[in-house]
Length: 305
Image (tube, rainbow, N blue to C red; front, side):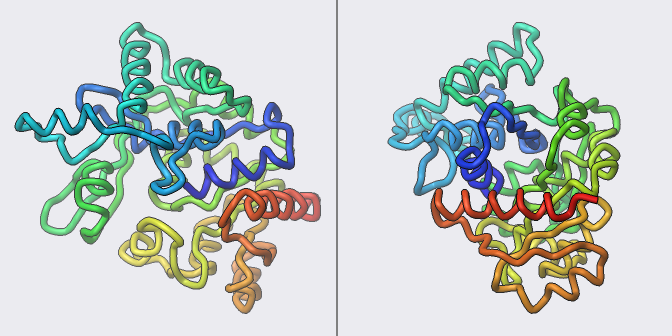
């Protein structure tokens, strides 16, 4: 959600056709026999102005007739709900992938159908799967962890299966190399940004653009605004603060943008080796998202060598 909201603000200040979003596919899963790409769809629906404002995922005004009907049967996947209109996206994606089209092509087709001008790229067309090593159970899939267990179980480790053989999707490395500004959005560093960097070539491409890369901290005043980022950082041995975020991102980005609530930690961030920019980062609505996007772009200009 953090990345989707930031992108929504960014297209208010930059022409959407100039924006390329490289999106995590480690959350992708086959559920109810359908290929579901949660992050790709959240970005697409948000940029289309169709995202559910209350849930932050799925479509506004959604109905759930199909899932209610599924309740008649002993489905082992009843815990993962898909709205009636959202089902159409997954049906189309599954059919096109079955035809042999790569995920990047299908993603572009879906974005075009929703009238989205931002170029939305999956980080890879190859299978990439985020696995969570949880207490007492071993490895489980990300959706099992995030949805079925409501990310309430302790995590001992995270692995990105398939990353070692995955290839960046067409256009991903070119986009990083050609970008005026590379932004690491305020997303979960472990399970949203981590899978991107695990694909061979992506981390190296970002490191090469470090002086033009700006990261936005998803941690504000020692906590995540939504989701398990703060708990994951703690469980995996990282400091849950903007300083902990800085230690993760210092090799990748020259600048870290933090909220006013963390202004006192700016010297500690800079001691890690990053320039620290303090500005409001909580995106309560489109105006705040656009203001954050302006601040990020301005910080990149100041950071230019």
